[in-house]
Image (cartoon, rainbow, N blue to C red; front, side):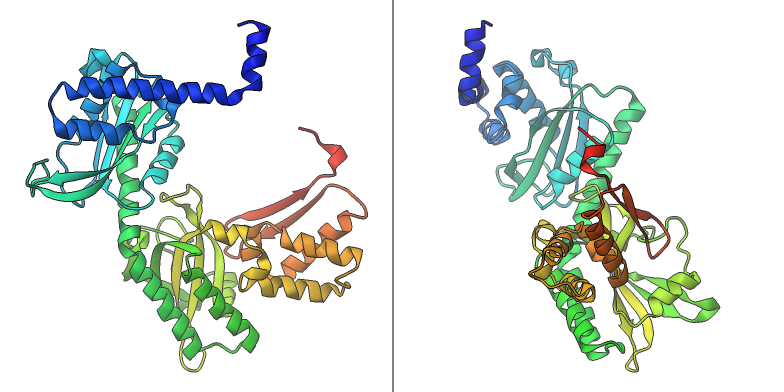
Length: 438
């Protein structure tokens, strides 16, 4: 390529993109004409759905003949699936159809259409270290007979079909690991989607119970706790699991899981939120003190990473349950993920957080219009959101004032916060700009 040609391409970046799109459209059209010659209307419809809205670069790596072969094999692999079940298949297409012409492994997953299937599977594949070369993810309407086969007189259902073209996956154990991992992900997606309405109902019930039987806390704190729970239920939390726990003073304090109350991912009696292994119902003095405080909510992170939606440690919101006289009787524990709105909104727009921020600012006693007052407001406004959900009033004030002082005397500074259940330590590290580079 001459320098003039390179300069022309750099001046017109959209030209390459448009060329890729045109090339992809041509290949799809050529492949569609080849498919049409097979006189299989169902296969033709499937091919059109499979290749619709696919990124051009995922199309142009295939010849028209290879696209036909891929569609034909994915269609065949998904031939039989009963409603409510998951189909996962892993195969090497070139071994079945030489016309495919690529050394790839393809993972096909078919489910009833529901949220979180695609992003959850991608997170699982990436976590397992497999390399993705192309992605196809149509939602198709299939006619399924009672035995799961396709048929013209079958019941119409919307199905999610995911075909991931991967770098070759070698070895039976490795292939089994990928297949079982995908099935485990889809099982958790299914129970979370199945139970989300009931989990929302349990949140509402816990909120009403808190109003009816509040602990002995200031009215402002109670109002903020109630408002926070209502805010959670207003599409600010992706509910993945719920379970009740019963508290007793026996043996220095116990919190026993009521497994029959489990919903979503916590309907599995083996699922844990705070501790792995056997559920240690006996409490340490520190955890017992935390539970018996009148503060009605516990907000922290679960030990377990989510298999649904995002591969991160799940958020854990515990709502304490009290008797009429304000004595602790248990906890309703929710696990899930704060939605993007919880991270994009300012703290002043979120119940509980706005109270923490206002208390820290009032405690500092700085005039809001002063330089330090404005800097502190910015520090509180941009404080890491996960930390802001979990930090106590005292911890927030100490960290915010320490960060404020760094503006006067820049130096390396570390702010540590120990998790309430003694499972991890959070560290905020500040380094002066002149002490680091890219």
